[in-house]
Amino acid sequence: MRSQTRRDAGFTAVFLGFFASAWFGWAQADQSSAWLTAGSIVSVLVAVIGLVTGLRAPAEGSAMKDRAASRRYGIIVGIEFAVIFAGAILLGRLGQPDYIPVWVAFVVGIHFVPLAPVLGDPLLRPLAVATCVVAVAGLITGLATDVAPSLVVGVGTGSLLLAYSLQALARGARRRAESSL
Image 1: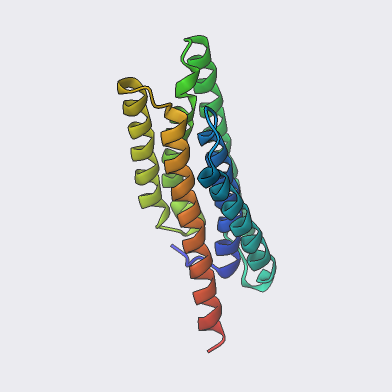
Image 2: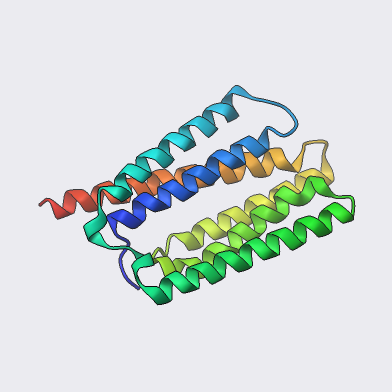
């Protein structure tokens, strides 16, 4: 397994920061919150910093420069979107749209497992487990209480993705410091 580059760390922060913002937004489906809005804003800022980091490190390469890895990435993400879409349609038709965020988070969590070797990032595996745990917590909370599953899953998944984005930026900064020694 190859080591993740500074460029990869930056673009990891771009994608996961962006999606963290979306999850914080989804958490506000039933009611708005200044804390969740702040989470969205911080997530976007982290994504922008990730973009700058990724673009400033072009010579380092990327997992996506390897055609086979790029193809596997596309296949994994394509399957993820198809499974999410099919499950969301099914839940909608079954009259259970409140559980769509639970389904989406669970599938997102699962997709991190095959992405770990493709992206050379073994830390995606614990993120996968944590995201699936959040999805299950959202399901249980939705079934047992009046709390909206979107709140639980949005806050949990948004927080996980934001934390992972920050961790990716820290790895990128550490890699930069190591390369300048």
